[in-house]
Image 1 (cartoon, rainbow, N blue to C red):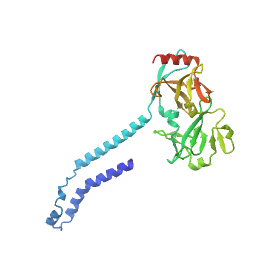
Image 2 (cartoon, helix red, strand yellow):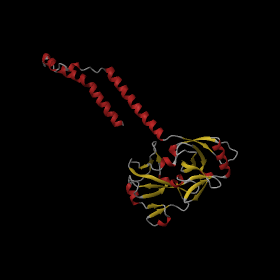
Image 3 (tube, rainbow, N blue to C red):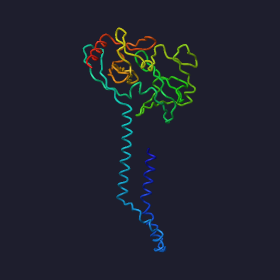
Length: 289
């Protein structure tokens, strides 16, 4: 955008300076017959002269346009990452239900699928998954190579290889395409393990699988769908659950501490199980809606 702005401003300055340059050249050529020159330029002088005041106003308009564009980009970014407001249900049976606001940028849904760039600004992969240990700590980040179809090679690195996140959500890591090409492939099937294939650890949970799970009560009955998982300092902090939807739309949201929930495998999927206290508070909250 900076290059476009400089080009636009330069063009504007040249157009504005045109009449002044022509006037200087006419004065320097005193030997030119003024009658002939007047006849030659007849009709051209009908063009409005650009005054210094108009140039200044044009520059102000340009600055306003740039400011408006920057604001539009900022607003679009904010809309792309809206805060999540949810009722927070703790494991403490005596604690009141309160409202919590979660920054969507710091969630699994906002990170998985994002492109990965290196320090040179080269797109080298995209985030395919995040692997957590039993305590909810991020152990590995699974990347898909630069193939835009997402069907290419998958590799896995220590989660700490991610150095930072950019304001628009991009992931920055010190990697190159050659490094990914030469890395061992990654598989979720532990039987695939070999010197050239890395597999998910026995104590690892796939974040994408957790996001596809459900929230169940103490008796195993489904009470909600897992919509997102917030991440703080490389650790799963809270799960955001949706419920009371109509045809998959609308409904309410609740947030629960990740560490206070039990992760169980049920019907070949990973689910979160509520404690008896949490289940009771969850039902109380639902009855108040």
